[in-house]
Image (cartoon, rainbow, N blue to C red; front, side):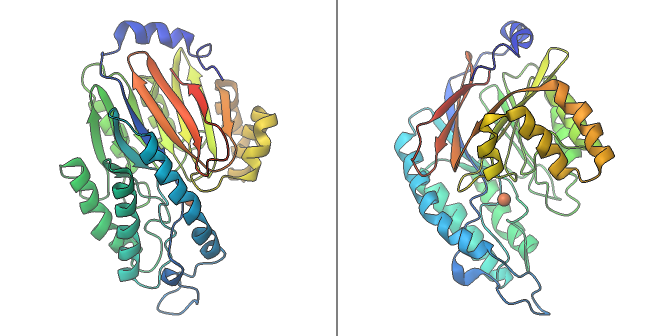
Length: 341
Ligand SMILES: [Fe+2]
């Protein structure tokens, strides 16, 4: 797939104004929903109403794929690999107690970090803090973990928001799921605070921004477009690229589903535009609202890419551009490279 055509106008601007920087790569995983069987609360009680359902079996089955993927990343990383990002739902959650939730989160954050031997930058997914004492456990475990990885305090006292600078590139990590996190305001504030001309700007948040309604989403999209920026997210359990382009500027959203991806997305290999249209209707239940979203996104969203099956992503970043490579987590398919810039 070649996205160059669509962003040709923006590329001229980029060539003139981009700050130069080093070449490096990083990895991106999302939504493995890991967990040990004994950790799940399978019987709903008054004390613990957070009962896990069929997800229990799913999470255990995911472990083999996840382990294969970690081995693959460890084998493929090189001296230019800088970090690995978790786009959320690292664990399934819905645990038997706050203490067990803490143990699960700690176990899998450390497992990834150790296996890959790179700094791990996670964002909060709806499962990472879901369940009895989940929010408290997330704060007790993930917050200090992130501080240790970045070597600095979080950017907020309300939620696990933070910013990482790698060379001339900016990575803004938003916690969308902690109650009262004010994540859209945080991302907008950080985008507006960017000084000078960064080479590339990335926003990492568990939920998709494209093609979803909401003032905050639209404001982030439009502010990020000023940098021809990138959104990395999970939640939708599919490996997809959506490029939103308007007025010569682009926002590129990349999702991954590390241990499984939606059958709908796999079938959509045949007709991406049709799937995008369905995707809007699937999440926007109100028909009038869905039509409004279609008008807002369909004319401007192009260069769809879908990779079927479980996958993780590697990003190669340099002055020559940004290349995404979807890699099958279970090693059953060859990688698919996509030139994003
Ligand atoms: Fe998920």
